[in-house]
Image (cartoon, rainbow, N blue to C red; front, side, top):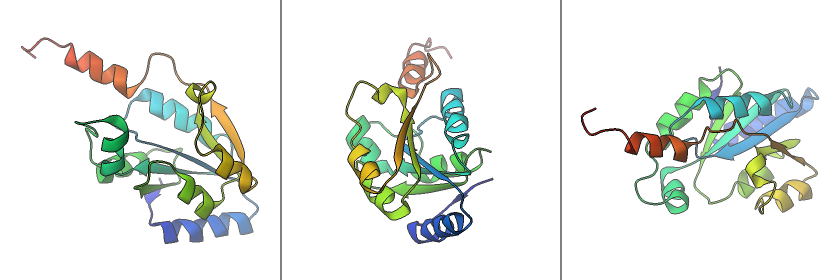
Amino acid sequence: MGEVLTPQEAVARRQALAAEGKTLVFTNGHFDLLHVGHLDYLERARALGDALFVGINDDASTRRLKGPGRPLVPAAERARLLAALLPVSAVLIFGQDTADDLIRLLRPDIYAKGSDYAHKILPERPTVEAIGGRVILIDLLPGHSTSALIARIKALPEAL
């Protein structure tokens, strides 16, 4: 089981992994309303290396990027849920709109993102490449997204 770490704790863990010659995979996102699509993605990301660190957007950056009413689940709770998942080694909460600062800090060997970035700009790509890391896009489980889940919930009859 993973842990929710401060940036300083994460750097110490990263240095220990590097000293052991282990590969660090890093990914980030909102992970609001955790669902099986998230789990599948995290399992695939973890399979790329020896440890998986996950950065999650704090509540303010999620609101900025996803709009009013989001997140549905507070960052501390999202972090705790993610840390409890078997593929996740560590979780960090960050407040920027991109994960560039965490990438520069942790220097992951691999930066994993969803294949939805195959045809759009991945803002962190230049930072990953500047530190010598590789970007790997992971196929997403079709039909599983937080937005789709929210839409299904909104479509439920009021009697529920």
